[in-house]
Image (cartoon, helix red, strand yellow):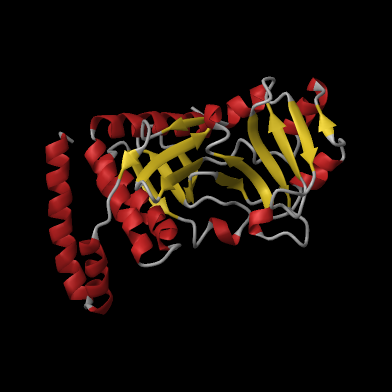
Length: 280
């Protein structure tokens, strides 16, 4: 079994768990997005450790650890967590993201190589030979190698959907890559990927020296490329704020390690109760 096959098996098991026990993921997502009451970006970082704990607590054949801050981000990769299959002993990385429903960054393209590479082929690329060359190139090598698990949310409706971009389907269906000029709020051009029905798939943003993080890399759009996403949560899940959690964090930040240890025991008992209710 390859790493990609191990990842696909994990996603299949993850979806099955959520389908059978929606309360578990609803509780976790509610707690994650409650962090927006503390700060607009707090939920993104805490989502990483929350999903790690979700896997460790509820998916018995898998173990996970948080590696984003101390391993990969200091190097060339973008992954935040590593998951190990206890059955196959194969480990694979996952990049977690929390984005509003709409534009979604799949890869940051830190070395700014995607846009310059596509520029060599001109403004419109539709030759099957050239498309094959592009997807097999070193420049686009990360296109299908990053396992991105985005937590897409609609804050007004308080809904979340863990949407998985299907890289393989995107590669198979790309019929045209077209350069589009700056405009409609963009100060840099983009290369957009379309299928034979002229449906939008994804895009490569400029990524030059004057581009910031929002103006470079590989992007897609959860609203415009719905055919190229699969939902790990089987659709949108309603979540709610948990003000008690905010208070708990406040207390934890001024409490001692002894208090944290006592709270940890109580929380684990509650998690064990949730497992029992769910038949795990």
